[in-house]
Image (cartoon, rainbow, N blue to C red; front, side, top):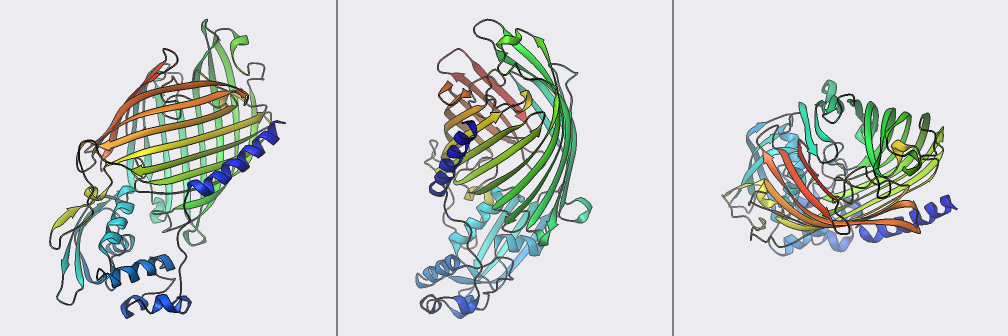
Length: 496
């Protein structure tokens, strides 16, 4: 019965994705494939750049945008693009390709701003500014100043929360390991709650497979963790877990290889070993306590992920979805399916800050002015498990994941549904500092017809520090509607 429920739910959620999200990126088109009526609307200089081998592939939607701008007198071509100052690993040619401002290419103001939002919002540039100058022949010259992200750096991992206490660690990252399109990451972290609970991890990614259209990831980690579970109205149960795992994933995607990938399909596999010990409380009160706490298992799975967001971490517009299906074998034979849908819609900023929509020739502009200044965000989540689920793989709401207003690790189960609505807005014109308010709800339990409801509200903020190219410092506080549970957290080096 359980696997039929999961299958039906996955089919329903996949159908929602088709409505929730828009179509994928346009396909490249050759000159002889352009419809005659569209070809007649385009100037010759646009037709000369049609080539699917170009860095920025041109599709029908792009040509229609060029034709509309040409008829409105807003289409120009780029005579020259000059880089007057730059830093970081990106070359001048790569920067121009990402922004689609190569000499000879068409220029439309709103299209250029769209590319700026796309590249800057995903962290490719840590600094980006420009000037556009108009020439007598109706062409334009573009001057760029930018810093791109250093591919090799140490990333601090520091946070403090109600449940875990102080978490202090660091990770080394090299995004272009060995001067190739590969990534290397490893690090360690300690928890002040119990110094016998370290976490060690390492991962390696190769993004050069099949010309950059696929990537292979390998990861290994070992760590001790603990969780506190509610045991009715009396006391609590505390469980410590030691989990070691090795995972691999092969993914195929589309877009501009590593930096601007928009979507991918992923095949995953992994092996993990779990040792668990009950530290305090009544074992009979712990969900799934009848399971053997120790064992080794393996899994295979497939997933789909895609998104078109203006920013990677704190989007103001766009959407994303992620679907994962897995089958586990060994000591813990169980199935799981999960879906995460997110939608972001621009909104008016309560402080009156506005997004850059129009530029004057000869003026200097900065990339963060072009980002939306406020948005409404919606999130829908579903995760379903069926079979012998180990303690370390159970679904847990709370913290920054879902049901943000509730303490992490106090509730668990094998069925989870979630929904969140959030309003976020810039506190300054540049978007270096943000605030957000939210309401959310999660339903958690062992059976879909008997789920416990966890709902709450809260607020928080994100602030940019002048470190590592602009790392974020964030904090949030949440409170439950239907009980006295609260949750809070502070983090440096990543975002909630």
